[in-house]
Image 1 (tube, rainbow, N blue to C red):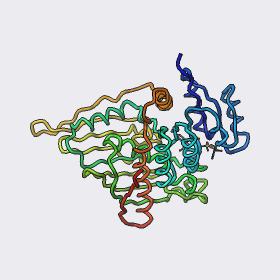
Image 2: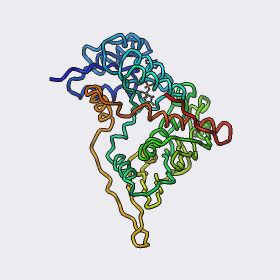
Image 3: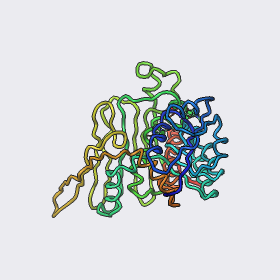
Image 4: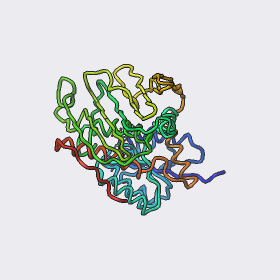
Length: 361
Ligand SMILES: NC(=O)c1ccc[n+]([C@@H]2O[C@H](COP(=O)([O-])OP(=O)(O)OC[C@H]3O[C@@H](n4cnc5c(N)ncnc54)[C@H](O)[C@@H]3O)[C@@H](O)[C@H]2O)c1
């Protein structure tokens, strides 16, 4: 029998349930404690989720005094930073929900804390476990596209503005970008091997979120519901990124990789009000290439999987703890994703292209 891995959950709202559910399904894993800043909420969660024997705290620092191997951070974005750093400093491995943080500075400090503690910092992008995402990455990495010079990605909901903490600048950091844009960026950057971002020229808007005709909390809306950006990446690659929570359009189009030898197109399924590549299901993956001077197109089968991506991410985190492996989705890599969001906000505010400068960690 293998050692029991002891887990703590910090933040016991909506997504914490998915974490609890996933941990409960893994043999030799025990949820030892839950913490939530709202008094009584963690205890309620322990009862509701039937986590027999789990301690409940109103302060995450009490949870971190316990002998737990890893923690899931399931708080609103604004609290990812302090709870992650405290957990790492207490010697716990961390699986933090996406987006990594509210600011780039926070993300840098989180990676530093992980390095100093020698503990994992993994970021919860579950689409990484979608076999289709792995196919796209393997394809781009195989070199069959030649030199990739242009990538277009993004996702769009036609009507899909969430409320609560998601629309408050100081709590979420940004709007559609922090909620769903970080997934699209991860999809494209992961396929490219996460090249360093160099500059960004961006535009953001809030035409829907601030209009009571389209959004019931319009007077409280502080973030962007749309962003478009041109990002220069190292290696002579340009990334055209766009994301929307609401728009008068069905889709913002496919993800495309243009290479010197071939191009890869990944289309969103585009059904209903939900669309976008990584915010919905993949429609198809196609390769455009040249044989004897003729442009040809071959479909690449989309894997219709029954895998629960969320459960896979939690399982992989536990496996990494158990086997002493590196973080499955390393904070050090996602720093570049966060740096792009930071650059987009700065560029949109100044109306100019800005440099992206990621401090050494
Ligand atoms: N991976 C995914 O598919 C996915 C889906 C939804 C949300 N998320 C992410 O999960 C996070 C939480 O989202 P949610 O919808 O569960 O939010 P939520 O508001 O339902 O729950 C957050 C909980 O954290 C608690 N909290 C706040 N500050 C805290 C602190 N300092 N210490 C302890 N508890 C604290 C709140 O009281 C609340 O109970 C967000 O970052 C969001 O982006 C990820």
